[in-house]
Length: 108
Image (cartoon, rainbow, N blue to C red; front, side):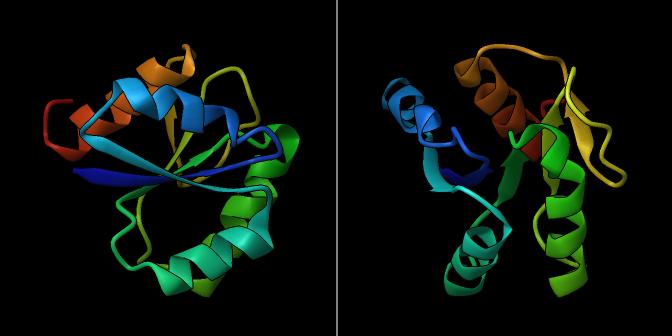
């Protein structure tokens, strides 16, 4: 089981996706402040997926400033370029989450 924190205004849409992915737990946060709070309270978060569009770069910077050794950050292609984040080929939410799961388990 991996835990992914999805950050962005429409992050809650990813909760619907998680029903079909029993090996992935989804936590959501609408923005940086909520994401920092969830990361501080939940050390078992394995990855962060930023779906905040143009704000993703700023959010990633805030997260890294707070905890440089935090979980890896992923962003879908087609959005803002985020230094230090892994860009995933743009896809439906379930596919993005599955790609994160494979990367974390060493499956590329």
